[in-house]
Length: 165
Image 1 (tube, one colour):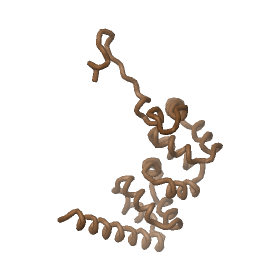
Image 2: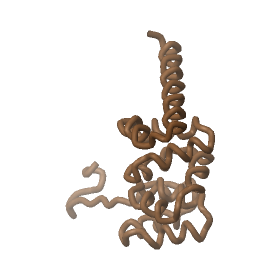
Image 3: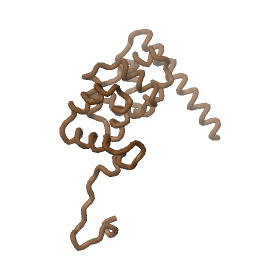
Image 4: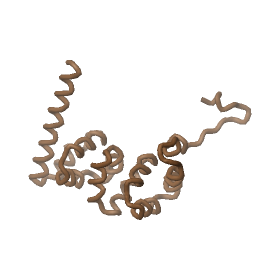
């Protein structure tokens, strides 16, 4: 199988999956819909959400388990994420934020209205809130914005740092 034929197979599978989602939404079978996407990776669910028009996108989002929302939000591109977030209740957004990695959450918070972003930060557990605030203190597009500088590295006092790596 060539790369081109794999892409065609993938496109057909995606098209078929989208048709299935649209059929489930139209029939009001939210539980079946949630089950059909439950085994997919969050990035695959994000791809499906991005491929749908806004109204079915909202329907699929509402059918997803709340426990997956943070991971899926992290995978969505800006336009689709904004569309999904615009239909979320603040409490729902806070719950999703609590499960997100710091760098992903910082990206989402920067796209939100300032007051909503601040309320999300305030609602986080102390440790998570401090890491988010620390990352937000760095300029955009710097290493501090990512999670790479938020960890701690230690070594014995007689060792050099290079020996620890």
